[in-house]
Length: 486
Image 1 (cartoon, helix red, strand yellow):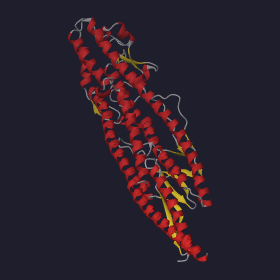
Image 2 (tube, rainbow, N blue to C red):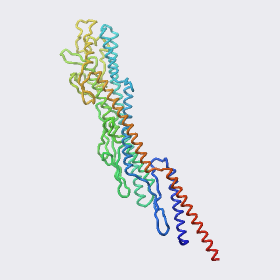
Image 3 (tube, one colour):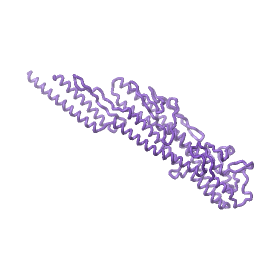
Image 4 (cartoon, rainbow, N blue to C red):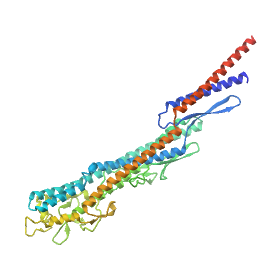
């Protein structure tokens, strides 16, 4: 080896060790940095200078990244659904479901039974009417709270859509930066880290699949195949509703002009939080509302009276805001009346004179059934109690049983929500574990391992020692050469 060749080799080794040391230092300092992928100094050899660093390579694993994005989207959707169901559970009164109509209907039956044993007692009559008022108030309050939850979900959808649009704009800037740096032959690894981090954030909102085109240009699609980003962001639009009621459907979310489907089921099909929010607003909350409306309809029917023509008319329970005559009081007509639970109320005449409940003359159009005006008349009260024990039809569109007693149906309604929440909770544990394992696997494959970096640092140290020894030898050779020349 000539002196010139030895000098070139030494310079190359020192340059490589400096670059490799810088890379190891950067890796080590980013051990706990999220979305940082390990860098490796790639070297090649040539016959003139030996090993030479040609580029800094970013560790990637496309298969594990795809799995991680899917796990993030699934868990985000499941957690959003569970959060909404927990809010619904709180509205219902928590573990005891103390605010639900089932509790107050049972109390009404007890009050009626007590009144029926002493029909002459005005105090017991007033207690029965008051218990009926509690039933109506419960249905009203549950409806109001449900619609508030729907508005809250609608508002969160709007906020989430705004966030998604901003993330797509940020993605465009970073994606352009990646393409620009690669075209210039510059180090694009930091930009690639940032871009991948944005994709992970987007996947929390809506499931993402990606494709990389020449020049490292990335294209994004939803898990359902809708284009999210191709060269430029696709527009995500949503019109929030200022208010919602049982008769009002929320607006759809459109991505590139295509409506985003809502999630389905307690182990939700939602990929990302956005579909779960749509599911809460359009499936879960309205499903419970339908059941409340059915409870209100049957409750009104149980206490219905007959007018002079023999037609059924509202009795103890009536409605506000609509003409009671428009109600169908046929017990066999199982058809949901949207929003009925929010309109039900106790007739003012019963509140003014509770004994009208005993006599069957709550409605002004109804004749008293107590023709002899007997204080001990209880036949009608027992008829009402019998109505609670009668199996009647319920609309199957409400999502639960279609044949049951009113008390059983109201209990089943609570069970429907609790089962939904319980299953969603179990599914959330699974998706959370899956996300954790996917992230861990991806981090193990692409992240920084301190042990590996320390081993590499020892190798670099040995290379540096070899370079210094070679440099020392060259120095001695040059000194000897100069001495001989003099």
